[in-house]
Length: 328
Image (cartoon, rainbow, N blue to C red; front, top):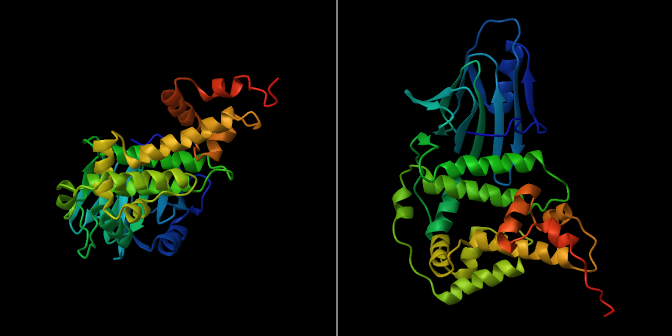
């Protein structure tokens, strides 16, 4: 279940108040055809969209029962219910979109909106998914990814998709020009990895098999890379290149030898930098400024993570009297 109440409210999109307008905007903005709509004088249809680094998010609400047909294309969409329930037809096979089930569909599909149905749609080029999967496995992917359409969000692991999507929506809602740009890129990467690991697709068995082991020195190379580049976007492609192995081998080596994932190590480094800023006697900085400077857009989440890592809230660290640098 998505918790964001006003998703993508400040981003580009469209609005239509009658059927003629709706026919025009769905074709020009979505590349879709209106198959069915009520014959009413007025409607209240609107959509908002936001471009992510390699994908796009849409929020759609039509306020009336309609059907849209989308043409064939080389992209994958993942549909989440925001309110109500909807249905997507892939060929003649229907898949419901509910609070506990999302739909993964190819471009060519028919989406049926009930009157109260509102959805969040994540749309990505299929090549982005296959490249990420190749990085995870350490091999080139030449076969097309085909997903099973229904994915239960209350199943083990799959709930992470809703959680990450909520984090993206919260980040967009609270976006600040001072926020490090890598936050959104890393959240999008986490969403893609979660989809590949938890979605039911024809290449899933490759991820479920054993990963080739890597040497301790390769793990340390990744740690050193993270320590030196914590203020930059940290992509699994870059970590794989540094280690000379697949991302999956890196993640399993970190889990086995360190007890945490590479991205958890990234968070530790950023928390360490934030703590150093708060303890710096020459720095005049608030908790919010420290969080933003170190890549945390959600200050409340930052405070929770900081407290868990250091046993005290960042406000207490900032409020601690600073030692005078002159020795007095």
